[in-house]
Image (cartoon, rainbow over all chains, first blue to last red; front, side, top):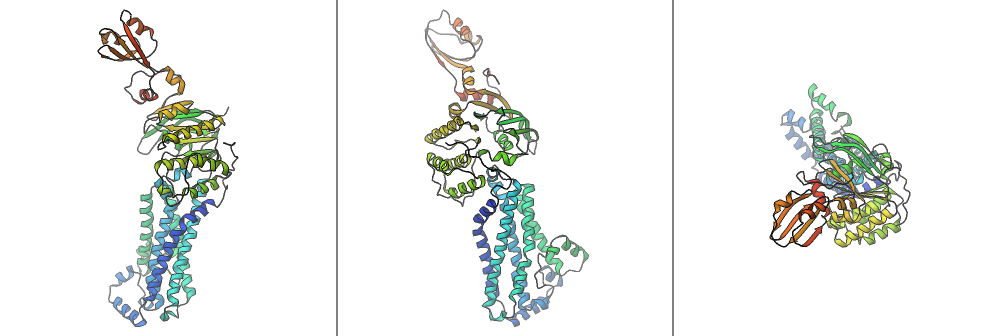
Length: 250
Length: 305
């Protein structure tokens, strides 16, 4: 055995290593989620009903009680009769919820999962401040969340390009709508990371974060077409300002 | 001389009121191999987690190399290697991935030493973590703890799962580390390992440090098992009253007893009886430890704490 090697152990020693390692471990998951959501968008666009069918669906929806329509986020039925409205409802509404769960599971991966599996104790014995672990891993998962959105966007764009009925849909607006989801997703990710750092119990973190996302989604969807001050107030308290269920077309 | 490990009235009470550690005063000197012993739930792992600043104490303080474990956490962790009692890592990665990542995190790892260490432990780093046996995971944990040749090794049950050959290699690695001036703090249930490599031991029970002693002092100061073969029957009652004698059993012409202290009272009691044979056994380390672990155990050996 040779003599001990002097090791630099400052707080920024090997900066970026945790970020890079998190990307190396997480890119396959990102690819799976992104390709899956992209395929979902592709299929939804390819089977898009024609204009007459959309109008028939709108007529059918008009027979439903307004409260039910509001709960389903279908307050503007005229808008739904357009291809853009259909994409906004079927793809972006659902995609946002799915990618939000990707953000929550990513948030769990920052510390909660490693803590549950007993990995974190060993990791915390390395000469790295805890804040760097949180920051670098959160940044890596934020990058991978963007990656998921990009893949989802590409799937949707591919579907639009190969569907003649959607020739008028502007791809820039699709890109804006996709980008518009990002702040909400980053909030979901960061919220999960912070809850995990405080509670340190995976089950509890999952319950709180999932409740936050589903609750926020539900309240925002309900509030999108509501006029009562109670629902508007709830909406304001959750995701309204971050536009959880909003797309650029709204 | 700066102590490598020092705790002052260190205590930890978990939520629910479970007192895991109570007023622990511990001092580990540079260059020694210190065995930290105790039954399950005694507080060994809690102590280690407090030293690593993985959990925070309820009261008291701990320092490594004279540095506060909380305030100087990052600087301290650059000088230590840690092996947890149960090694869990990301199952989808290969051992090589994990070793490389930890090496980059630590920086300054001597690749030649890393290769030597891997070879001596006969470890194949090319497989995925999920495919390793308990023993192989132990080897990987040792590599991760030792690859940067730290000044202090903190090892929680290091040799559990190692086969006898690897146990010997492990002992050799520890003795080499000691000869180079490094310090080893290990918790263990393997008493042979403790006896073979440790300079001193601390015995912990129910969160309280029962004693600290040199291993050789512990075995020499302890009781002995004495077996006396005599010609003719012997009344056990005659021997029970002798100072230092306990646990007397009689089978025909053989008497077996536990003797603490001098032989003279026993020899005087046997005066006039024809003694065919006397056999004296020193207790195993396990028997000594049991006297500290068991509340109803007979008198403990007199050693300097």
